[in-house]
Length: 319
Image 1 (cartoon, one colour):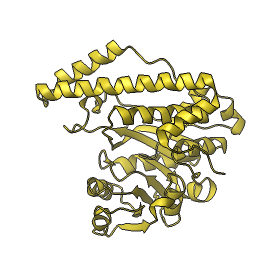
Image 2: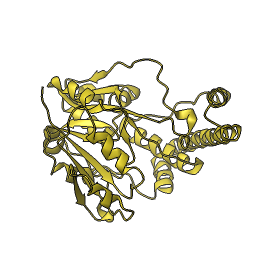
Image 3: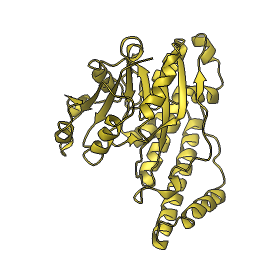
Image 4: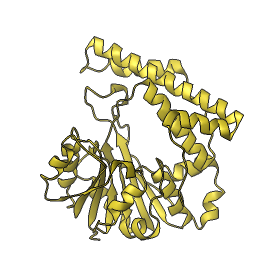
Protein backbone atom coordinates (compact mmCIF):
# COMPACT_ATOMS: atom_id res chain seq x y z
CA UNK A 1 0.00 0.00 0.00
CA UNK A 2 1.40 3.38 -0.99
CA UNK A 3 -1.13 6.07 -0.08
CA UNK A 4 -0.04 9.71 -0.08
CA UNK A 5 -1.06 11.91 2.85
CA UNK A 6 -1.95 15.60 3.01
CA UNK A 7 -2.33 17.52 6.27
CA UNK A 8 -4.88 20.24 7.06
CA UNK A 9 -4.25 22.68 9.91
CA UNK A 10 -6.77 25.46 10.74
CA UNK A 11 -4.98 28.33 12.51
CA UNK A 12 -5.46 31.74 14.03
CA UNK A 13 -2.61 33.36 15.96
CA UNK A 14 -0.67 30.15 16.59
CA UNK A 15 2.85 31.62 16.43
CA UNK A 16 3.83 30.05 19.76
CA UNK A 17 3.25 26.50 18.58
CA UNK A 18 3.01 26.41 14.80
CA UNK A 19 6.71 25.80 14.15
CA UNK A 20 6.77 22.75 16.45
CA UNK A 21 3.55 21.56 14.82
CA UNK A 22 4.85 21.82 11.26
CA UNK A 23 8.26 20.32 12.10
CA UNK A 24 6.66 17.33 13.80
CA UNK A 25 4.67 16.42 10.66
CA UNK A 26 7.39 17.20 8.13
CA UNK A 27 9.83 14.93 9.97
CA UNK A 28 7.65 11.81 9.90
CA UNK A 29 9.03 8.47 8.68
CA UNK A 30 6.23 8.41 6.11
CA UNK A 31 6.66 11.43 3.79
CA UNK A 32 3.76 13.85 3.47
CA UNK A 33 2.29 15.25 0.27
CA UNK A 34 1.71 18.76 1.61
CA UNK A 35 0.43 20.78 4.54
CA UNK A 36 -2.55 23.03 3.88
CA UNK A 37 -2.81 25.74 6.53
CA UNK A 38 -6.13 27.57 6.54
CA UNK A 39 -5.87 30.86 8.40
CA UNK A 40 -8.76 32.96 9.68
CA UNK A 41 -7.11 36.25 10.50
CA UNK A 42 -3.74 35.71 12.21
CA UNK A 43 -1.89 38.89 13.19
CA UNK A 44 0.90 37.47 15.38
CA UNK A 45 3.42 36.20 12.84
CA UNK A 46 1.85 32.80 12.22
CA UNK A 47 1.68 33.36 8.46
CA UNK A 48 5.29 34.54 8.28
CA UNK A 49 6.42 31.31 9.97
CA UNK A 50 4.32 29.18 7.62
CA UNK A 51 5.89 30.87 4.59
CA UNK A 52 9.31 29.57 5.69
CA UNK A 53 8.22 26.03 4.76
CA UNK A 54 8.16 24.92 1.14
CA UNK A 55 5.79 22.06 2.04
CA UNK A 56 3.15 24.48 3.38
CA UNK A 57 0.41 26.13 1.35
CA UNK A 58 -1.64 28.83 3.07
CA UNK A 59 -5.30 29.61 2.42
CA UNK A 60 -6.71 32.74 4.07
CA UNK A 61 -10.34 33.42 4.93
CA UNK A 62 -11.97 36.31 6.83
CA UNK A 63 -12.31 35.67 10.57
CA UNK A 64 -16.09 36.11 10.40
CA UNK A 65 -16.36 33.21 7.93
CA UNK A 66 -14.74 30.68 10.26
CA UNK A 67 -16.60 27.71 11.64
CA UNK A 68 -15.20 24.33 12.58
CA UNK A 69 -16.99 22.47 9.80
CA UNK A 70 -17.01 24.36 6.53
CA UNK A 71 -13.63 26.01 7.11
CA UNK A 72 -12.06 22.56 6.98
CA UNK A 73 -14.12 21.81 3.87
CA UNK A 74 -12.55 24.83 2.16
CA UNK A 75 -9.09 23.40 2.84
CA UNK A 76 -10.18 19.99 1.56
CA UNK A 77 -10.79 21.44 -1.88
CA UNK A 78 -7.07 21.91 -2.41
CA UNK A 79 -5.54 18.77 -0.90
CA UNK A 80 -4.01 16.26 -3.30
CA UNK A 81 -3.22 13.27 -1.08
CA UNK A 82 -5.11 9.98 -1.03
CA UNK A 83 -5.48 10.49 2.73
CA UNK A 84 -5.93 13.67 4.76
CA UNK A 85 -4.78 14.18 8.33
CA UNK A 86 -6.65 16.77 10.39
CA UNK A 87 -4.85 18.42 13.30
CA UNK A 88 -4.45 21.83 14.99
CA UNK A 89 -1.77 24.50 15.10
CA UNK A 90 -1.01 24.18 18.81
CA UNK A 91 -0.51 20.40 18.69
CA UNK A 92 2.46 18.33 17.57
CA UNK A 93 3.01 14.69 16.67
CA UNK A 94 3.92 12.40 19.57
CA UNK A 95 6.65 10.71 17.54
CA UNK A 96 7.85 10.31 13.95
CA UNK A 97 5.69 7.23 13.30
CA UNK A 98 2.20 8.71 13.76
CA UNK A 99 1.37 9.01 10.05
CA UNK A 100 2.73 5.56 9.20
CA UNK A 101 0.77 3.99 12.06
CA UNK A 102 -2.45 5.65 10.90
CA UNK A 103 -1.89 4.87 7.21
CA UNK A 104 -1.59 1.13 7.79
CA UNK A 105 -5.25 0.88 8.84
CA UNK A 106 -6.36 1.96 5.35
CA UNK A 107 -5.23 -1.35 3.91
CA UNK A 108 -8.77 -2.33 4.94
CA UNK A 109 -10.95 -0.91 2.15
CA UNK A 110 -13.94 -0.55 4.50
CA UNK A 111 -12.13 2.04 6.63
CA UNK A 112 -12.99 5.69 5.97
CA UNK A 113 -11.13 7.19 8.91
CA UNK A 114 -8.71 6.62 11.76
CA UNK A 115 -8.76 8.58 15.01
CA UNK A 116 -5.86 8.85 17.45
CA UNK A 117 -5.42 10.19 20.96
CA UNK A 118 -4.58 13.57 22.48
CA UNK A 119 -1.97 13.38 25.26
CA UNK A 120 -0.32 15.93 27.54
CA UNK A 121 3.49 16.27 27.40
CA UNK A 122 5.66 16.37 30.53
CA UNK A 123 6.17 20.14 30.36
CA UNK A 124 6.31 22.14 33.58
CA UNK A 125 3.78 24.70 32.32
CA UNK A 126 1.16 21.99 31.78
CA UNK A 127 -0.94 20.38 34.50
CA UNK A 128 1.23 17.49 35.82
CA UNK A 129 -1.82 15.55 37.01
CA UNK A 130 -2.70 15.13 33.33
CA UNK A 131 0.75 14.20 32.01
CA UNK A 132 0.58 11.17 29.76
CA UNK A 133 1.64 8.04 31.65
CA UNK A 134 0.67 4.93 29.65
CA UNK A 135 0.12 1.77 31.67
CA UNK A 136 -0.25 -0.67 28.77
CA UNK A 137 -0.27 -0.88 24.98
CA UNK A 138 -3.78 -0.09 23.70
CA UNK A 139 -5.56 -2.25 21.14
CA UNK A 140 -7.14 -0.49 18.13
CA UNK A 141 -10.94 -0.67 17.93
CA UNK A 142 -12.97 -0.93 14.74
CA UNK A 143 -16.60 0.11 14.39
CA UNK A 144 -18.76 -0.67 11.37
CA UNK A 145 -22.51 -1.16 10.97
CA UNK A 146 -24.61 -2.69 8.24
CA UNK A 147 -26.93 0.30 7.85
CA UNK A 148 -28.07 3.52 9.47
CA UNK A 149 -30.65 1.84 11.66
CA UNK A 150 -28.05 -0.53 13.12
CA UNK A 151 -26.29 2.51 14.54
CA UNK A 152 -29.43 4.41 15.52
CA UNK A 153 -30.75 1.60 17.75
CA UNK A 154 -27.55 1.45 19.84
CA UNK A 155 -27.72 2.57 23.49
CA UNK A 156 -26.42 6.14 23.99
CA UNK A 157 -23.07 5.13 25.50
CA UNK A 158 -22.35 2.72 22.66
CA UNK A 159 -23.12 5.48 20.16
CA UNK A 160 -20.69 7.76 22.02
CA UNK A 161 -17.98 5.10 22.00
CA UNK A 162 -18.37 4.55 18.26
CA UNK A 163 -18.48 8.26 17.32
CA UNK A 164 -16.12 9.99 19.76
CA UNK A 165 -14.20 11.45 16.83
CA UNK A 166 -11.51 14.09 17.33
CA UNK A 167 -10.09 16.40 14.67
CA UNK A 168 -7.03 17.19 16.77
CA UNK A 169 -5.72 13.86 15.47
CA UNK A 170 -7.72 12.09 12.75
CA UNK A 171 -7.05 10.78 9.25
CA UNK A 172 -9.57 10.36 6.42
CA UNK A 173 -9.83 8.91 2.97
CA UNK A 174 -9.76 12.15 1.05
CA UNK A 175 -12.45 11.07 -1.41
CA UNK A 176 -14.90 10.13 1.35
CA UNK A 177 -14.45 13.38 3.28
CA UNK A 178 -14.30 15.74 0.32
CA UNK A 179 -16.79 14.14 -2.05
CA UNK A 180 -19.16 11.96 -0.02
CA UNK A 181 -19.46 13.14 3.59
CA UNK A 182 -18.11 16.69 4.06
CA UNK A 183 -18.24 18.37 7.45
CA UNK A 184 -21.41 20.16 8.47
CA UNK A 185 -21.53 23.88 9.21
CA UNK A 186 -21.38 23.98 13.02
CA UNK A 187 -19.76 26.12 15.73
CA UNK A 188 -18.19 22.95 17.18
CA UNK A 189 -18.66 19.18 17.09
CA UNK A 190 -18.02 18.73 13.37
CA UNK A 191 -15.93 15.66 14.12
CA UNK A 192 -18.44 13.42 16.00
CA UNK A 193 -21.19 14.55 13.61
CA UNK A 194 -19.02 13.35 10.70
CA UNK A 195 -18.38 10.04 12.48
CA UNK A 196 -22.10 9.44 12.99
CA UNK A 197 -22.84 10.07 9.32
CA UNK A 198 -19.92 7.89 8.20
CA UNK A 199 -21.07 4.99 10.37
CA UNK A 200 -24.67 5.38 9.24
CA UNK A 201 -23.42 5.23 5.62
CA UNK A 202 -21.74 1.88 6.20
CA UNK A 203 -18.14 3.08 6.49
CA UNK A 204 -15.77 1.63 9.05
CA UNK A 205 -13.88 3.73 11.62
CA UNK A 206 -10.77 2.87 13.60
CA UNK A 207 -9.72 4.26 16.99
CA UNK A 208 -6.02 3.70 17.63
CA UNK A 209 -4.62 5.24 20.79
CA UNK A 210 -1.13 4.29 19.66
CA UNK A 211 -1.40 7.25 17.23
CA UNK A 212 -0.95 10.28 19.44
CA UNK A 213 -0.57 14.04 19.34
CA UNK A 214 0.63 16.34 22.10
CA UNK A 215 -2.04 18.93 22.83
CA UNK A 216 -3.00 20.93 25.91
CA UNK A 217 -5.13 23.94 26.80
CA UNK A 218 -4.48 25.62 30.12
CA UNK A 219 -8.04 26.26 31.30
CA UNK A 220 -9.06 28.01 34.50
CA UNK A 221 -12.23 27.02 36.34
CA UNK A 222 -14.46 29.41 34.35
CA UNK A 223 -13.30 28.00 31.01
CA UNK A 224 -13.54 24.47 32.40
CA UNK A 225 -17.13 25.11 33.47
CA UNK A 226 -18.14 26.40 30.03
CA UNK A 227 -16.32 23.63 28.18
CA UNK A 228 -18.01 21.02 30.38
CA UNK A 229 -21.43 22.47 29.63
CA UNK A 230 -20.77 22.38 25.89
CA UNK A 231 -19.58 18.76 26.10
CA UNK A 232 -22.71 17.71 27.99
CA UNK A 233 -24.88 19.66 25.54
CA UNK A 234 -23.23 18.12 22.46
CA UNK A 235 -23.48 14.59 23.82
CA UNK A 236 -27.11 15.11 24.74
CA UNK A 237 -27.87 16.56 21.29
CA UNK A 238 -26.07 13.86 19.31
CA UNK A 239 -26.41 10.75 21.46
CA UNK A 240 -29.28 11.51 23.88
CA UNK A 241 -26.72 10.96 26.62
CA UNK A 242 -27.21 12.24 30.16
CA UNK A 243 -24.25 12.96 32.49
CA UNK A 244 -23.37 10.16 34.87
CA UNK A 245 -22.50 10.80 38.53
CA UNK A 246 -18.82 11.67 38.84
CA UNK A 247 -16.45 9.75 41.08
CA UNK A 248 -15.48 10.55 44.62
CA UNK A 249 -13.92 13.98 45.19
CA UNK A 250 -11.79 12.50 47.96
CA UNK A 251 -10.44 9.86 45.59
CA UNK A 252 -9.68 12.53 42.99
CA UNK A 253 -7.87 14.62 45.61
CA UNK A 254 -5.75 11.67 46.74
CA UNK A 255 -4.92 10.68 43.16
CA UNK A 256 -3.80 14.23 42.29
CA UNK A 257 -1.87 14.63 45.51
CA UNK A 258 -0.03 11.34 45.00
CA UNK A 259 0.99 12.09 41.40
CA UNK A 260 2.16 15.61 42.35
CA UNK A 261 4.11 14.85 45.51
CA UNK A 262 5.93 11.95 43.86
CA UNK A 263 6.96 14.28 41.03
CA UNK A 264 10.67 15.05 41.34
CA UNK A 265 10.55 17.89 38.78
CA UNK A 266 8.34 20.23 40.82
CA UNK A 267 9.07 22.46 43.77
CA UNK A 268 6.85 22.16 46.84
CA UNK A 269 5.15 25.45 45.95
CA UNK A 270 4.46 24.26 42.41
CA UNK A 271 2.95 21.05 43.76
CA UNK A 272 0.52 22.93 46.00
CA UNK A 273 -0.35 25.36 43.20
CA UNK A 274 -1.15 22.52 40.78
CA UNK A 275 -3.14 20.69 43.45
CA UNK A 276 -5.28 23.77 44.02
CA UNK A 277 -5.66 24.26 40.27
CA UNK A 278 -6.78 20.65 39.76
CA UNK A 279 -9.27 20.72 42.65
CA UNK A 280 -10.69 24.04 41.44
CA UNK A 281 -11.25 22.66 37.94
CA UNK A 282 -12.80 19.50 39.38
CA UNK A 283 -15.32 21.63 41.28
CA UNK A 284 -16.10 23.54 38.07
CA UNK A 285 -16.81 20.28 36.25
CA UNK A 286 -19.10 19.06 39.04
CA UNK A 287 -20.94 22.40 39.05
CA UNK A 288 -21.39 22.18 35.27
CA UNK A 289 -22.80 18.66 35.60
CA UNK A 290 -25.24 19.81 38.30
CA UNK A 291 -26.38 22.85 36.30
CA UNK A 292 -26.80 20.80 33.12
CA UNK A 293 -28.87 18.14 34.88
CA UNK A 294 -31.02 20.83 36.49
CA UNK A 295 -31.68 22.43 33.10
CA UNK A 296 -32.35 19.02 31.57
CA UNK A 297 -35.17 18.42 34.03
CA UNK A 298 -36.62 21.85 33.20
CA UNK A 299 -36.69 21.10 29.47
CA UNK A 300 -35.10 21.99 26.15
CA UNK A 301 -35.65 25.74 26.53
CA UNK A 302 -33.67 25.78 29.76
CA UNK A 303 -30.91 23.70 28.16
CA UNK A 304 -30.64 26.04 25.20
CA UNK A 305 -30.53 29.06 27.52
CA UNK A 306 -27.71 27.50 29.56
CA UNK A 307 -25.77 26.70 26.40
CA UNK A 308 -26.32 30.20 25.03
CA UNK A 309 -25.06 31.71 28.28
CA UNK A 310 -21.85 29.67 28.10
CA UNK A 311 -21.07 29.99 24.38
CA UNK A 312 -22.91 33.10 23.24
CA UNK A 313 -24.11 31.07 20.26
CA UNK A 314 -26.88 28.72 19.23
CA UNK A 315 -25.93 25.15 18.40
CA UNK A 316 -27.48 23.92 15.17
CA UNK A 317 -26.39 21.51 12.48
CA UNK A 318 -26.71 22.99 9.00
CA UNK A 319 -28.04 20.69 6.28
